[in-house]
Image (cartoon, rainbow, N blue to C red):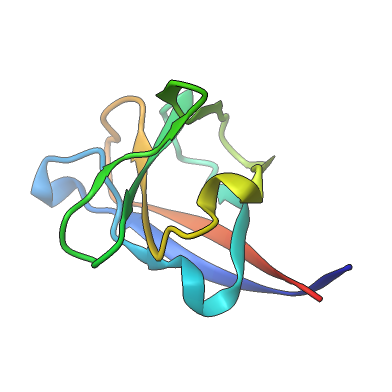
Length: 112
């Protein structure tokens, strides 16, 4: 049974010339289970970086490949929460440069 969801925000800050978002604390609120992509998002895919300590990030892999999902503007993207088990900190990486700051809503759920 899925419990209450918690919304977190991962922000891609273009002033830092990066496609990588700020970190969200996955372990505090449950497991990441989805993204709400804003209407202004220009990337067509996202991948993820994970960290065990909040300082050193590496790309998350699933079955030997980057864990990547197709996205589009104004979409709710369902993710496989098992990919994020045991990953305390997660960043979202846009597949292309964004024209302005983007706030991606990261949905987490606790399993009861």
